[in-house]
Picture 1: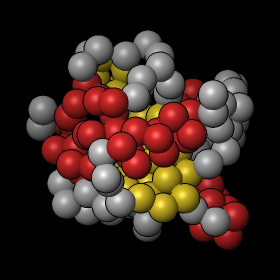
Picture 2: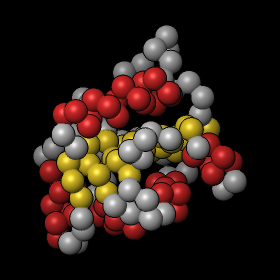
Picture 3: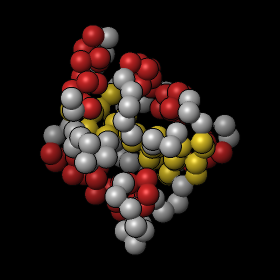
Length: 140
């Protein structure tokens, strides 16, 4: 099953509000993330392998902290493009936490509509932060 299909099912069950980004919106997010946070000279297949300036925290439960950063803001969730090309807009950190509690087994990224931060949780149980999320992680 495609990751976003599993997430859609769980969000529907929970009565959560969400939206899938259209192609133009996805292109904007991808281009902005690349411009702000990616070093194309680094080797690797995944976004987290090419991050330029970031902080990390290794903790198998670190995904639980992300909703505390997002709070009541809208956020965009996306995945390694090899796994799923969809991007999902959620309307609060509470909805993000619900989604992450009810689904599992995938690497994911979280940003806002302006890409002022980028957060990733990968299969090594590492939480990566970029942009304005760096300071937040340093204070945890």
